[in-house]
Picture: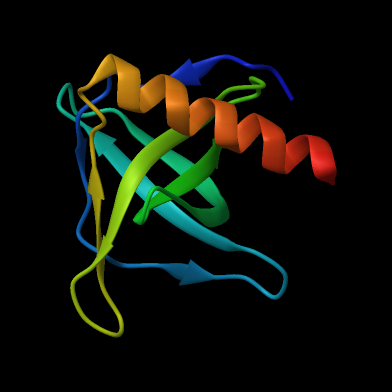
Amino acid sequence: MSDEMNKDIDVNFDGDVEVDDEAEFITLEFEDGIEVEAEIMGIFEVDGKEYIALIPDDDTDDVYIYGYKETSEEEFELIDIDDDAEFEKVVAEFDRLTAEE
């Protein structure tokens, strides 16, 4: 998996999660109307905040990382990480967690 992270994409997400036998997928719809299916790699915590790692189904090695907030038992919100220092800290924790696997 590459270290390339994508933080400059605004996401409109309606909270629907399509469940597969082994993995969960969501459809990301970007401001330009492009839709990308993404597998939920996992949710992790940094400094008391939750973040989500997504693997887009677009034949790249990219990983998208967003803030994560549950809005109800069945819905959640993806939050862009606008602060560069926060983003770097989250990526470092993500790299540490994935290196342990």
